Image (cartoon, rainbow, N blue to C red; front, side):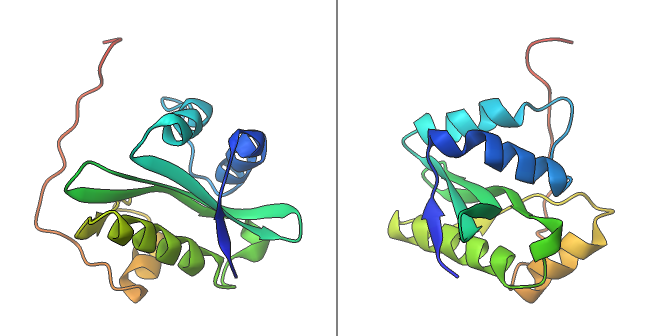
Length: 138
């Protein structure tokens, strides 16, 4: 199941897929995130197709030391068919080719299905606390 780098023409299909997979939140605009990933020199978005239909997509980026996977989503009708695994593998290969030694991602604590998926792929909970602060509007 080959994954490919997506382009600007894939924006609407990718955002629709992320929405169908339950990955979007009102405070993050997935269209802006998609565009920023494609425009940046250290990020991209990969997709998997079933024929012409986009059935999986993942954003990947790196900060020079760590790699991050975001928006790893698979259309509900295509889950448990290896699409998510293919996306994670291509993202890790992309990071490795750039000399990045570690891939990270964030999963909401209550999302047991996602936590189990990533554990099966060799990801483990890190002994860190993620701190955050919204920038801009209070």
